[in-house]
Image 1 (spheres, rainbow, N blue to C red):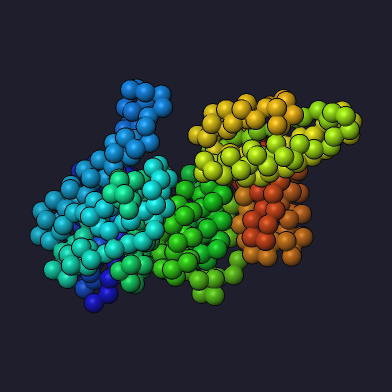
Image 2 (image 1 turned 180 degrees about the vertical axis):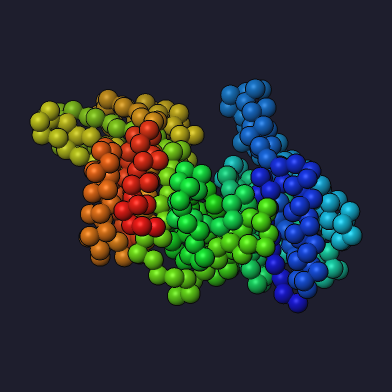
Length: 408
């Protein structure tokens, strides 16, 4: 008897009818001879609602208390999912993250899973029950409730699949697989039958909202096969995420558009012939690292015409206020820079294999943007990803232009 882990996201359990549909999928898998553990997110926009409630009480909620609040969202879902399975004649038992043995580091809001102790879930499966586990949450060694950050339920599902030696982890969502571009942005986007862990990791990190990047990284490290499929079209096999030796070899597998970032530019005048403020810059990025704030597309330029030095980088918009306060605190060390912020941007990322070894591919990417008269503000290149920062109003045109150029 093989084991499956099924994860149902917020849209898949947004209301009672959808919870029943998810329960039917789990019960059907048991009828096919599988042992099934499900991982469930909070219903619909419950997490956003809970955050809004906290912010109505205080603009800076205590991280511990916020985690205590947010974990209640998944607890609603697992209880309702278990009831739905039982109403269909199945056996089910619900587990919070801690009860399921999800042990995390002691960090609130964005904790990493340290290990999974699946004894309770194993026992449930052996009794013939469907184990219904709360995603997005765990417990630290200090017995504190923690949350895993946005998309954390994906990580819970992959970690649980690895611990249970499951045959596969099925991620059920509102789209029926991974596409060459966001089908909501570009209707001609094509579904991929399979994609490698490496390519999916870059797509996720670049803003594709199908899976959380941390979960893909974990799947790659533990060699857990993942299938992305639709809750609303359960007979569609979706997209398999697997080893690159098994997946097709694409030159370009997809394009991701991310509009959740802001760009910051620090312009510092050169004083007394000084050409850099490297110590201050080092201090800035060290502090960002300590706070878990991820930066991207970093660029440092020395301008001789003014003369001045420019440091430009991008961060998630939700981290912007904290980054600005850090820059203010390091004003002297950074050389009293002039700060320019742009939140109206889109990061367009093209994902493929061996891109740096294919200069014609990189040239075609920028030729397509130039032909569409789309201004490029920043560029970052790598072996399997090329990213360009463009004004947000040009995002759809940029994706369409590149998609058409490579006939994806």
